[in-house]
Image (cartoon, rainbow, N blue to C red):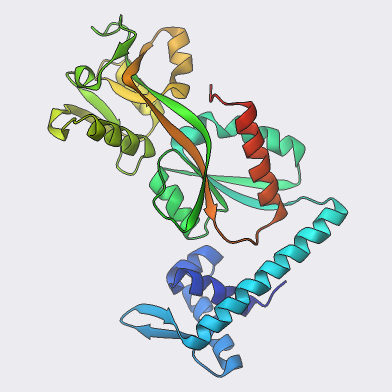
Length: 302
């Protein structure tokens, strides 16, 4: 394994934060500071400038960071080459997904992946899209799957499949006999939406803005934190909402909810997001390839 001090330094240098590095490495902050100071003593020079609770790399720190990048890339190449020779694909992968994807897409995908690679331990964290992107940025997870655009250009974003969003309402609602509905017609009724930071909420807000819908037109009834809670509130007659078509298949079959196509139609991408670094475990590459092929063979979430 590569020098632990160099690993700690590389994480601090990448995040420019001792606190975030400690969280990423599952270490205490004093332990992180100690490892960096040991490396500085070895080189007999400062690697970070520390001013006003902010840190930056010194010239020496920048050189060490460049070399550590190359060292870890070579180490990963070596590890992957040996694993290819032995056919061993194992390890722990940390995956993060926004709520809709975690509940309605990933169980089948990860179940099939686990059957093929039983020695890979996949751990799943669930949050809204903002939370998942934050975890990828801080290397808390290896791969994120989100349902809204990602603004960080330092991350790799790859569209997996498209997801249709539809208006949902109780079966006794005045609009229930329709096949489609315009957004201004839907918003004449109390509206239930997802919480701040939700990818679904962000996509719907952009859709409304493009159609010239002012926020004052929205008769907001409730803000809820999951598709399940929204479906329950709509079934109870507390308002209408817009959700992924994939989340309401059971309710449509049971007749407890009615789904109307939005006019114009609304779709959003489900996307993979991960760090740009070239070096990573072979299990991560296998999962990405598996997920890409899965999305091609299952173009619909439902």
